[in-house]
Length: 203
Length: 111
Image (tube, rainbow over all chains, first blue to last red):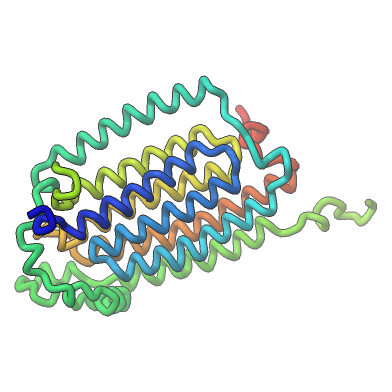
């Protein structure tokens, strides 16, 4: 009886949500910057598990590859470049902790209240069991949408509406250019300053 | 809600996203290390991503955002990578110029 109603999806959701939230709290409450980076890696990794559970397997894989594998490695390099002894542990005042926890707790209460108060959000999807797992292959539609074709919206009858559902080619190009410009800018910002400090060469 | 027997809905995802958002904001507010502030920003962006994925999942809602939610989440991930690169460059530049990473020391532009 209990096993009959036991839902593996729910179990895995609770598992991943608890790890994600626990390690997010670990990022907040640890004062050692290296521990914070490690907790952040685990927290974002378990939130990738939540993405997989929601059927967004491509975004989950990207989360693991770009976020955990790229961005956080960059952050860890930043930690290693600046981790002198006096910057490893920087404690916050107790008064600031109390104030921030009061404000944060109030904000969390408001957000949770809002999350569970809309009936369209907290009623389970009744068609869930009829959806085949095979339907959730999202990588090909996402690739087509980034190339400008929405293969998932072809059944839209109204031609006027269909025109508005064009793909994401333009944002994709913009974001690519943005990444290029940003990386060049970052390399320029972080360059060594030796030549600037003595422009005349006079020491 | 009966614990492990409840069916997961959008609200549960929104609750996890709200927790991420609040921890990220508190990280930004309380950390004195500039890289800790950066980690808070990553947590906030990840909370937003969780909401996008939840509203785009057709397992959780019958009329969902569909693929748009996943695509927006992808763009958020890409922009987070760009933002981390620039913020890290600024932090390293600040560290080279001032020999400290404490954001409380960075008050030269104070009006």
